[in-house]
Length: 151
Image 1 (cartoon, one colour):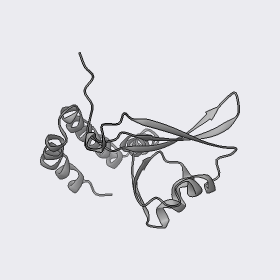
Image 2 (cartoon, rainbow, N blue to C red):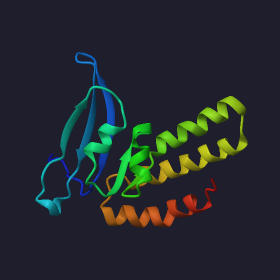
Image 3 (cartoon, rainbow, N blue to C red):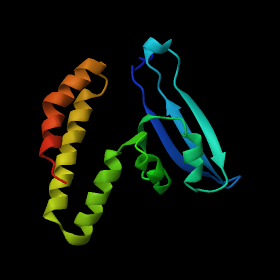
């Protein structure tokens, strides 16, 4: 069976310690849409000797747009400029609510975890669908969950 290619653009930057060299690697992953020549996903590694925020700042100095990344504090200056907009990771957001709920038994945190579970369920149903169908499902089911989610 042939592997199905997804039509999407997704970028992620993640820091990893490379034990053999004790270097930090910035990983850029791009899933290119089929309309862009059908190129396969690609990964590019940028190594730096430490985790200073200057490295991603230099690496992304000409970039303008959205960035999906982990909660690395070195990205904060990038978001402050307004040129790069953060796309928050729901798993990282959920983890904060889980921590608060475990520590304090917060009913607000518990409600947030429940709503995030509802969003995960929508994404599970959307998985593997064409982009237009995913968008329609998200607008019909996830948008109202987000709209009711008061922070």
